[in-house]
Image (cartoon, rainbow, N blue to C red; front, side, top):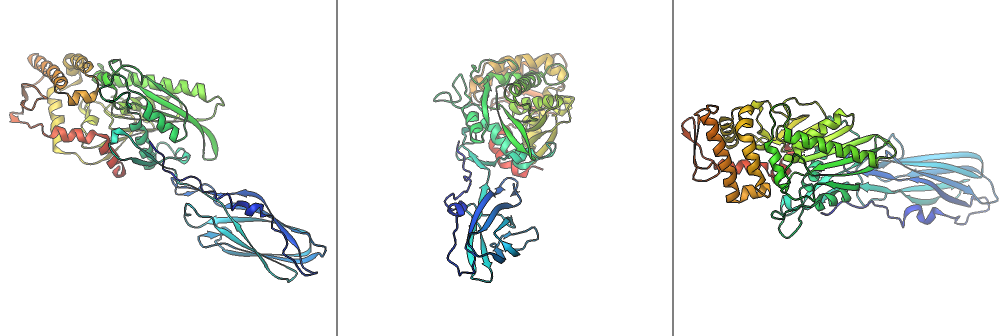
Length: 513
């Protein structure tokens, strides 16, 4: 993982013009030998994320001192700035000041206002012309510092394959109303979510028994988060209780002119092994048990972190995200944290349904319409997500066909709990990871066999209609599946799976509506 944003442009050798100890240049007997001294300097700071300036002007204080024996009775100072800047809020590029009377010292505050986006290496200069008692004009050049912070970052991750994913991150993101969708914060959240996937613990990432937190730890370090903690990343993947690994870090920020404490929490969304069995545990009623129990655990860890790290009692801002199962768990945790009175910026991706009683809270769920995973458990069972859904892409026939098969095989939550839930959860525990289940034929047949056995039991009990006919194994290419007497091809299953992959969400984020 590598940060590619530009360092702040200071050009320190030019700052203060070597102290701006500009001495007199020889004058006539009636002239004014002067020194120009630079006082307090406030640089111009530009933020690439917000597209505006952190400070609306840069200010430098000058003191012009008469060091001669002849008093001056008239002093004229002319200021001129380059194009793209102004010397006052009216947009003037040239301003003249004149002072009459006995002059020993003149003080002047010079303000430089930007009228365009600065270049990263730019250092505008203001020309200062001095004329005393009608004598020779003297010209000085005063450079102004522009601190350009582009807030650009890039992550490299095996989740997204070769290349990198670029995003912006800025404290300004947490000045906005969290109930409103912020496209740039969504992209930063996606970067955090995929960084939370398990990192390599050995030569083979997907077959190693323990997954580590290296990716997410590096992500937090790059964006300046501190106090990094992770939970359950170091546990064997065979642990399958209704919990979820989560990584947390925090730091002080200045948002809207007020110091606050930002806590970032990323729920692991890939490489979580038999945690996936919790996806099967819907529970009999209410919220999805496997997601909600894990969400409660995550929320408790976030609140514990806040108690331990926010010693000054600053207003707390919680930024939480997750992908797929991690999206479901973070969605539940975000709703709990909102209910506990925290300001929450929640962004989830590819998130399944989590509850039948959704909460109105500041969590935004980004969904690919072609992705089957967010459609289950289905809305026909009453399942939805907390917060607000945002979509990209379009529904397709293959995904709709798969959903129809699902609903024909499992017409209700009651049928699922009675016949499918426990057998599928037990079969899931046999796989070392969700990718093993998808890639390994023998593991897939275990899941397929468990599903088919449950289907036949439910049909024999009269709880599944004869609309769906399945012979052999639903995961086998040789399976014969009929819906309403018509053969159904499963070739579209691969396309639906690709619609769930992080690459599809990385490409689709810019199209979210």
